[in-house]
Structure formats: C-alpha cells, structure tokens
Length: 179
Image 1 (cartoon, rainbow, N blue to C red):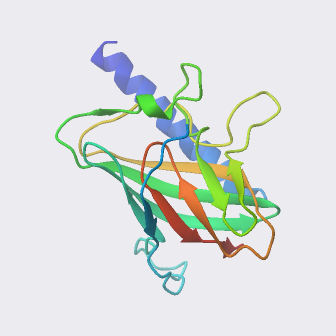
Image 2 (image 1 turned 120 degrees about the horizontal axis):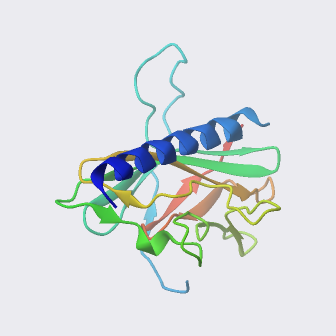
C-alpha cells in the first residue's frame, strides 16, 4: 500500500474509532498471561481541568507496546473500557494477534473475568456480527498513541473488580467504576 493511501486509511480509521467511542459514551485463546494489580484510583478530575485523567491501570505488551487504562465503567448493564495504547518500541507494531478470526483487526477477543462467579465476558458483538470495540487497529507506528475502547456485558452488581485482557497485552485486575 503506498504511503498516501496508508495515511488516508489511518486517518479514516482514527476518525471512525473516535466516533465509535463517542457513540458508546453518549448511550446510557487459552494461553496463560501474567496478572498485575491495578493502581488505586484517585479522586475524579474536574471537568474543567485540562490534565489527563489518572490511569486506572497500566499494561505491557511485546515490542515496546504498553497501554494505559483510562476507565472501566459499569452502566446500564454494560462495562465500557477506554484505554490508550502507545508504541514505545523502535519499529512499527502490527496488531496481527488482535484479529477476530477474519482479516479484521479488532479487540473482539478481549474479555473481562468475574472471579467471584467464575465467568468470562467476551467483548460484545452487535446483531450484524461486529464487535462493540475498536476495529481496524491494523498497526501502531513507533511513537504513536491510539485511543481504543471495548464494551462488555456487565457482571452482577456485587462484583467490584474484574480481570481485564485486551489484545495480547498482559492481564490486569481493575476496579469497576459505577457510571
């Protein structure tokens, strides 16, 4: 793919991801991976503040990929996870392990695990078979940060934390914020 076409595709993908995140916010493999504990959540930042929100948790991936979990919010029977992924590596990172079983690069294989009731919740799929998550993640260029999201069915209200698995990043235990 030539560079100009790649830039157009990347711009369209970023725009569609932002629209999908906005739309979600307006509406009320068997391998073992290490589990990390989340940092304590600080008090919510003022809406007037320009400072970036404190990370709920941080995850590490291969080749310099890391993620900052911005929120894990339970609302209206669903859990919305918002996060950013940054490539701190020395070369572009192809998200080939983030496919949904087809040629679509998505976070459909992501999950949250309710240890209390021993149940795994996969990323939600709509009636047309599309993941309610960031799609077309494709690649993350070196130095680039992408804003991503994934949506899940919410566990019962007595569950206060879940294990979160996104793409091929490490698994982390995160608290559920009530929305």
